Length: 129
Image (tube, rainbow, N blue to C red):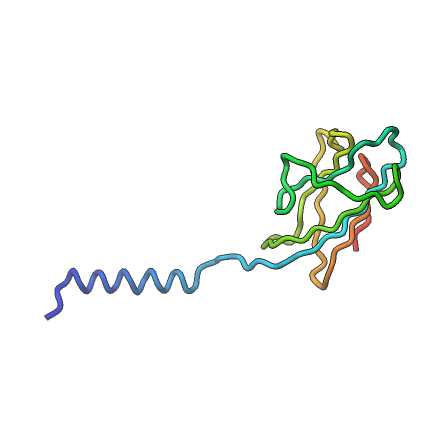
């Protein structure tokens, strides 16, 4: 005869397996964003970067952007795994964050491929495809 403790243990095990099987874990997707930044209004540019909340970005260090037109236009492409539908970023020039005391830029992913985002440093205007 099976003891009531064993039945209780089997019941708990079945319950745990069922919860794990149907849990609400959010599915992650690989997302690529091509960021382009216009900085032509700034003099003496030494560094241009971007920071954000999703790997490979972070809020502690700049991810350096590549000059397309020196002292005018910079670009970078970042790819990461996320379950979110957007990423938040801020651009940094010469160690200074843009849009201080304002919300981060929120870039919504294009689910059909690479998201392209063009911005002007320290301006809220944006262009996203």
